[in-house]
Length: 419
Image (cartoon, rainbow, N blue to C red):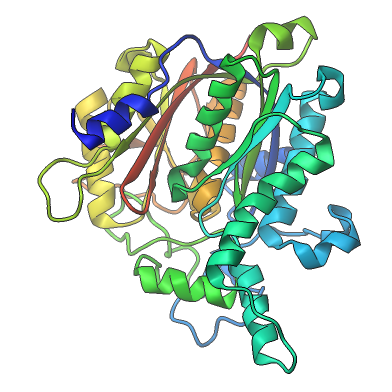
């Protein structure tokens, strides 16, 4: 068996039905809290605008999705501010909202029965920049970039665990944009091993000069200064992505236990798979289509039973064509409604896929497909039924969420309506 095949086999999770999602916490550029964000999504309200967290005038890309109205002191004790960065503070807010929404108290479950798994892609950029600035100043000290990144991967999860007494399994996954799905899948595995409750998902933030320089070096940012023209996935005019901050954390529980305590269930995380693209310069097709097919098989569903797809929506012509081709091969050309509400937030790195999971669950609840904004003209070589302009009412039972991360990571997840 090849290394890739072995990794795919390990990544698949095929041992039974999905687990219940009972709580959602959101920090997004178009809404701080789940209700505020979801209302903005259904209105088609974008949070993409000129960066305000630093002066972007000297950079070729100047737009981003920033979480509005976030006051650090409202979400984290002052003594922890020097030890945390924006990403961790946003994650703490989302975790608190998710637990409150679930109506769950981890203390009621006993020791080691509740845990947390999060995703990150560039944790520590802001903290690392502060350390470099301290080095440049007189008497400053220095922590290496690698130390600060590694530390903040742990701090993000550790602070959530400490605050809520989550003494069960914990971890951080680093698969860039795919991380939000991978983290929830890891939480599902822990539930199947007997853990009662898991907080999982991703929240990310890289909106500082050091992080911005890294994004520019990656070559994927749109340099368009008009927010209405900057991020247009599946369009002939697509010219790159817009970066945002934020994401979503979900509370997952054993479904039987959740029903027993009378919890409101948004839906189930019913299927998941991860694949890897071939190495650059080697033969083979991208792995996103395989991930989607494997996730459907894991959920025990056929393509005809998927009612909506939440697309990765790279905003790059080649990547958009590849995703559209994968969807056409699985569902037929324009065979299923496709949406990309991330056009209102930008791509949120490790937070993006879990925010799409939240959107999928709320779409199933409300029987509405949220819109893709701005990208109203779909390119001829992208044969997708893109939902644009306004929400589309539809009978929704199951949704497929797709994500791709730098380095060849692909992830796909299926969520089914709750009961």
